[in-house]
Length: 112
Length: 115
Image (tube, rainbow over all chains, first blue to last red; front, side, top):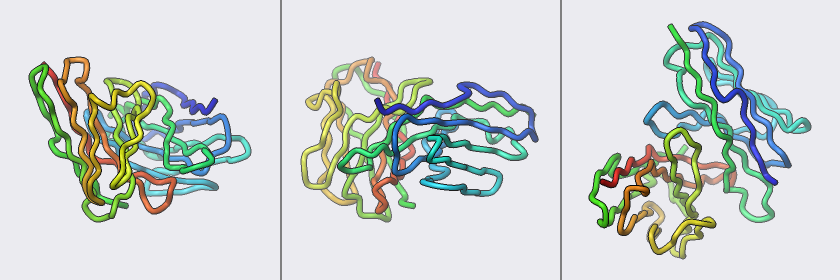
């Protein structure tokens, strides 16, 4: 069964802390996405990766294909980083890989 | 990435009426678009995949006669919720398939409240 598991479900941090959110998946994928959703807001795509590591500002995403695992790191966290972070993957489907399977999300709260 | 808009951003309607939500790809020719529904504190649920000029493919359990999808051009897809009921109240999000077949660009969402 194609599954995506995220941990933790909820995370509370103090401003300035280093944050890590984890994502694991069950079978082979063509790509993994990290998405951000602020309360009441739309979905923002942070990263799409299929290998290695990507960095954008204070955000870093890594993926280990052999271990079927990815992490999203936030350095020097800030209250404006408070949001739900969602891991989504494109499982190999034999046809179009467009279809995304989503994790349940991690609610991050960064307190000042 | 592609810029995707949705209209309206929120709508309140009476039970039994129909509501149309538009999803536009502003700077990219969208052959494939997706419609999602998101209930509070839950993740996105794919409702259907629409391809320009052909019938949408609905996910299991989604009533195609209730959620009418039209993708008549490369820049516009519409979702019509027919005979809306309070249980249809949700956040509806569209996305556009990018040139990389792994990629999707999301619209800002439409919040539907049915009274």
